[in-house]
Image (cartoon, rainbow, N blue to C red; front, side, top):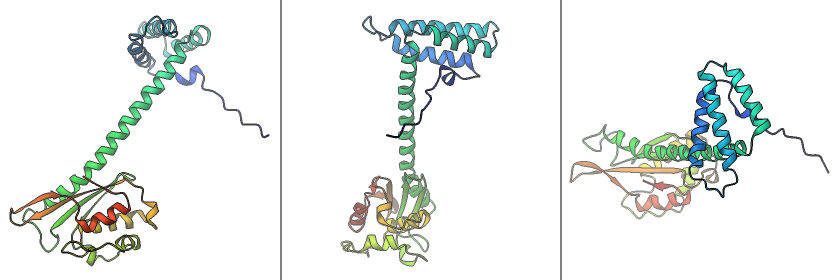
Length: 249
């Protein structure tokens, strides 16, 4: 049996910054205080947490009174290694939980911002054509957001038909798509935007496209009302969008 390589566990010193000690101590104490207030006498860690909070407060005070950061830091590390009653381990556990939750929240916010950019791209493009369709834009404008890369693309109806390059994966996605609308299946703005994405990302096969990572927003020109308005996917596009697990906003 092959011996597993030894992995050194982080030391107290690895977890305590070398600069900004007072601010770090205040942040650590504040975090602990939030949990400490909810503890009862049944919590085995309570005494250790209270002890650590007091030591963190002393660390702040020492720096305020003129102790160098290096000396105050060294004294704190020595204290934790010699006297900690479980408060340090508790702090590390809770800090990891808080950091994970914040990272997840940030990732969610970023994801939502990328999704919203599909609408922003479509609206931004149609604002350039307040009079509706014309020589350079069709009756539909689409914004496409890719949460994998964070990039966005736009498309207009009719553009793919005249595109210099039609990506092979886009052509494959359209195979078997029935024409249930009054226009060809390759005439939609969604097709134009998707074609641009496939070319930009150099996709070689459909399986490289992850489900629920592509978000489309469409704006269509209402000739009777004389304005652009949001719309859902046409029945032609519904078919191939489902093949790749794309979403509508």
